Image (cartoon, helix red, strand yellow):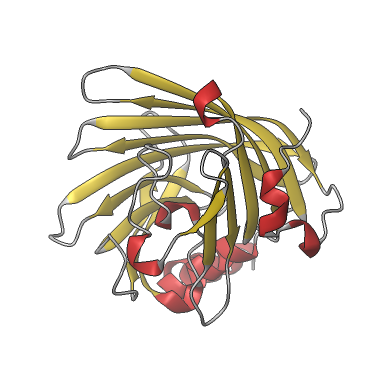
Length: 251
């Protein structure tokens, strides 16, 4: 009976569709909201580095998110608001205190760099299950070199004409359904970005605390380190409003 059950479970896992895998990734347990402090290190092709410090507040799996920049001094007070919407364009806006105005990020500009980093505005958003075509390319590969963990490789092809990508290939841990690393390809189907992701377990939630992004074509990179993570802070939807971008939270 035990042998039969093992064979049955293996068969079910092997026959999982790409959409089913993406759904499992989406449905894993997450906090209602999070607050954190982060550092962002941007390395240019020349090797010159730029360091930024920021505060983040987010809700509903980061579908609502606000960021404020604290350092460097010239960027102090710059804010970012994102509200993801179903079946309509996401709302994204930057508060620019030096100009005393908000700048709306339009859909056709979401491939632009976020604060000079290797992350685009598109990279800052979740992948809606209805906006991608998913396919499992492999279900039995090492997640990383010298790693005992086994991953799926999931292909995600965006349907949005404004996407800067033709597809993503994501290594997904078979035990946790967490994205471990990813390759993203441009419209010519050439690799554009490579990403590595680490997580920390807080209470019962796996939360990203490290992100490495390399733009392969430009030979630049960005490292995001997330610290002082607090979960389930009781944020309401009213927090995520443009007027609140003007108020930098007290550290």
